[in-house]
Image (cartoon, rainbow, N blue to C red):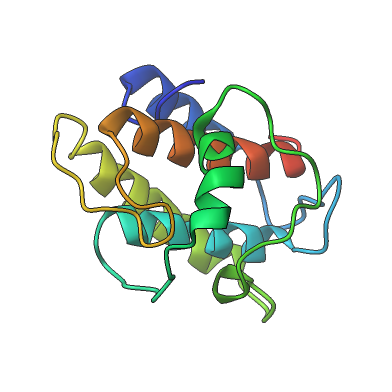
Length: 147
């Protein structure tokens, strides 16, 4: 699995985001492209310590799902999402795109950082695990929209 911290993966994700437009339709799921761009910002807020979403660590979730968050195995389509991360209200592509790009640019400035706060639901993660998880989430949703 690629890591969002590598220059190649960062450049790839940015390029794929820029292929989207306000008319891009999902290949699965219910979100619009604006909602997806908004949804993808939530995990970036967590890693950049911009927001505490009050997610509670859960030993069962950790046991069953933690490794799938950053493994090489792709996520299946239509997975349920944490209710706090659902983008159900209308979101404008023109407003959400620069927000997501800005967060990704900010995260990339931290690519050499080694100390990371624990994930609010999954606990301690290494830089490698954080980077793979962020890439995997973005990759999943960009594939959802054909990018």
